[in-house]
Length: 498
Image 1 (cartoon, rainbow, N blue to C red):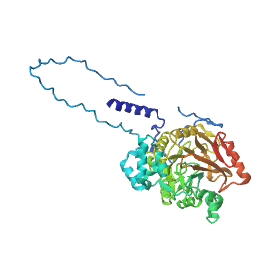
Image 2 (spheres, rainbow, N blue to C red; image 1 turned 120 degrees about the vertical axis):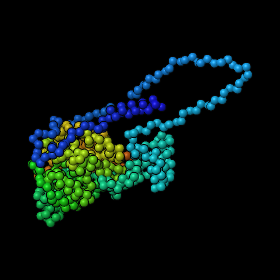
Image 3 (cartoon, helix red, strand yellow; image 1 turned 90 degrees about the vertical axis):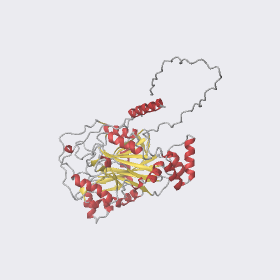
Image 4 (tube, rainbow, N blue to C red; image 1 turned 180 degrees about the vertical axis):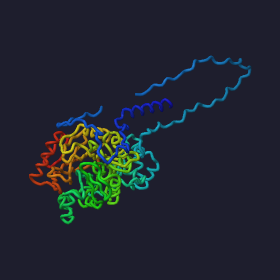
């Protein structure tokens, strides 16, 4: 048994060393690095850019023997000659087998992976979903046919959803159950960057037209965004009335009440991991986080420390648990503080290590993992090598879908290991003239977690955005097709792997 335990331990160490998602060293940003003035030297050196066609990186394609010592056999001790009378043979007990023991439990298993052996959890399931469910699970275990999918097939809820019900995790802040209109599909739609700065053109137009939200987002586009279970966008301003602007070229701040516009246009979730959420300093940054809570907005990507900033937001939709992680590597000479153990800031991706850890952890706790990064070269359709490399690393660690923003314009789409990466949706509602943009529809089948996606063309001009029609629709769609040679996009915007 000792040999078995030692062998298991050696095997575990070997697996950890081979894993591509083990904790990596992450550069630490000290308080001295967080200044009100832009640093004179770049913190990050970007890899050279490459143009399409995109490269495809192929997927990445022993025990110990312990010596035992043996003693030299010795002669048996001399015995007295037998007595004249016959003695009864001594009574000896029958040898007993050592008690059977279970194989040592893998310490890396999560509570979700061990749920089928948790008797208290099984009692909860029996009380709430019936004794037959437990019997069927135990039968699947006995027959060697158990997998985490067993629960979804029996109940229509995954083990991640059920175990959270048991523990009460669903009561946490970054967790929301959505009552989907269509039980056969999980509907997401993704937008790019939004700034609701009081001094910029978008909010000036909103005020000019009597705070009619349809003046800045066309009504048909609003109706579209509201038709999905979850609409995702990037929030690019400090939502506060406090603070002093940082010494940088562009800074954005808006009244906290502007956040209510998200509800008006149908946005449910925003990323705070970007290069403008800290534009007016620490107090305004912390106000922004509190504003999201006060206005009932779902968010991720920023926090009072690294633990908060790296937390995913979890949605439960049609029996499945979906995680969204947000991170930023937007600034070449970064001023926006990166969250540390005791330092407020955004979840940084200038090194892949922390995001890889977060992705792997989210994958161990949910059915489907989405990464929504703020990255890419501004005002360029070209995809930098570094963000392609990072996207592939995140998929290797468990991400199921990656959709980016920040570049102020569209960038291309590719598939890696069967998972889609839409590198940049650019602007959605930002002060830039005549920008081709769009929203990305993602439909997840709750039965097998397969994904169907569609690009829907839009146009954005200085102070408003609208859904494209006719020739304009074709112009924007053709542009997305031209910068996405690694995928097939049909006339309806449906995206397929080549």
